[in-house]
Image 1 (cartoon, rainbow, N blue to C red):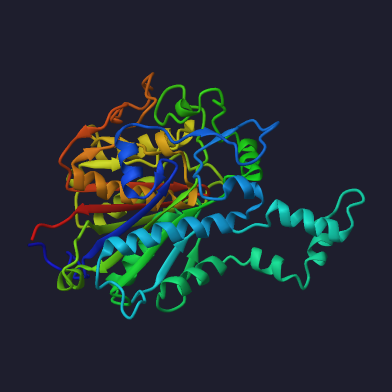
Image 2 (image 1 turned 120 degrees about the horizontal axis):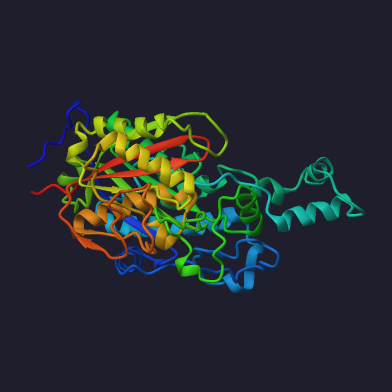
Length: 429
């Protein structure tokens, strides 16, 4: 039986519940089943007009009422809806005894995108400011003074506050945003709270809902998005020679973390362990990583060391793998630096669900746990022409049977914000 303390004397952190919302479906079963089948959740955008946009595809999630509401729904509303669905599934999976008097007995750590003024509200503020000719932001801001709608729409912590009330979490909820590493950062904060003894359990959520016209335009201006609009399912192709950018997506994941000793005491089913976390930032450029790869390499090495392991103990890497030419090159550099000439298999879920941005690190952590539980490595689909500059085993096109006990899950964000997690298989006994 594995000890309830790790190599540094900290409580071992167990995962006892998970929930998923992805472009492949709502719920763990649909998302994981679609991933192992190599099915793509990328499709043409129909929720809002895409005329004149360079990219017209995304990994969207269909929710009841989407057709009636359209893009007018603020991104924060979609973030909250996705987070609720994922959290409800995770709490149900954690089993009887996780709630105390109907409340969750630990803190909430919510990873979500920065909240911005939705176009519908901007147009309303512009109308109030007088829409004769261009309307400057100053005039729009003045028009929003005293508006409860404007205040609530721009309140970053509002989503976390409402989720905390809904699930009865303890203490002040923490909402955070660290670019594409956000979901992993939320998990890291929960892990560290348990390890320090500040909490015995934590609810960690990564959620994303900004598939909207303005976001597509912004990423297009950065030349970051794929423009393979004619064949959406084949657009996302991480590590492949003809890759041309990532595909935006939305969704959420939730994980219930517990002190392993407590989880055993209440008879919970342990789905896996979070053994280590590594974090590094390079502050090199708003979007690009430092060419020396120092922060990426440092985050990977730090996570492995934090888990008390050596690189050779890692059996599989769940890639950040966005499909942009630079990201995949930098991740390859990191893999070679950390693992040498014999790196473990690495695959990218983003080839099927797209890049869920703030949710990605949490979603991919759940997929990593499922890979160990089921002994199946999800594939990197759309791998048609190997890139000789990559040279990694990317589990091309089809899932693979493999018994893996330790997984490294990579999350590398714009601005050089990098978080890596080491996850372990559920202990026997």
